[in-house]
Image (cartoon, rainbow, N blue to C red; front, side, top):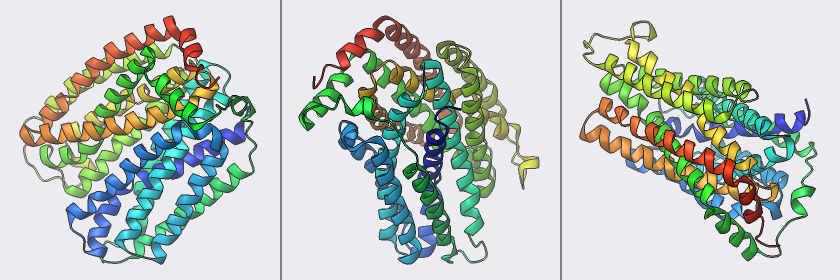
Length: 421
């Protein structure tokens, strides 16, 4: 396989950050047990992660070409290696904040660089979309692995035990392997560096010029609505399992992993299918199937009889069926990202990746807040029925985006490439 070392390196980089980013729920629980902080105080860890991602993405998106994609990824991995080693050495709440700030900053560098690098190592739009889905499926495998990795170091008999901090030595080791693999892997960025603008002002002007291109504006709306829907479901599925399906708390969390598993499977399958069929038709089929699954699964949650549930074997059917929505919504995000990136010149991939990260973060935060408010004002079923609204919006936005991309693809390339020349 061409560029196999680079692809392996990108997959491993994504894997490391998938574990760290999605450990925030586990860490929030553990810092309350270990450091005696309140739930509201512990909740700031989410902000340390997300706000840092958005801020650093905005700062580096237009500057990433100057830094270099490989160098930016090495800096990101170096940051998390140091932060992971600090966690067990200096066990305190402030080091936990520092860890998530470093993880957020590192992920911003990693994601922008990886998204931009894909354009250097794939031959056409189908290959781009295919590898993007494999990459995102590997991210979900990292999320799944994180659940089991952290649980292996938690002492259930002594909640105050700091033994769970040992997991960070393992994570530092994985990140070090990723660092060494990337360091020893040549990446040809000459085609991009030859087009570097003359100043930082040119960089920023180029990014803003790109952002107001009509097809990019439609894409941003599409990405925002998708992440709004996905994060709303992902963040509140454990609460839905607990409050509506009346599962025990631990089982509610465990069964939420079905969503991560189905999402990983969906992206893997899409990686295979997208090398053979149009991304547009695949996404339309997936959205219609997603809406059908919502209408099928949520009525199953009605009239739960309140029987005692002790494990997976006696959990209600809805707990298994609804999370399968991940199988159908999974291909959307990687496919639309790939579609916009593959329609732009290589030099614009860094700034475009930055815009993707920024608006994804905003969409995720918005989705979680909206779902939470609907959940509180009405109930969990109503909150998840609301997912039909973004699904409907996506059917329209993806259709508009696809038509604009086909009609103006060449124009976008020319217009977006003007800055700094």
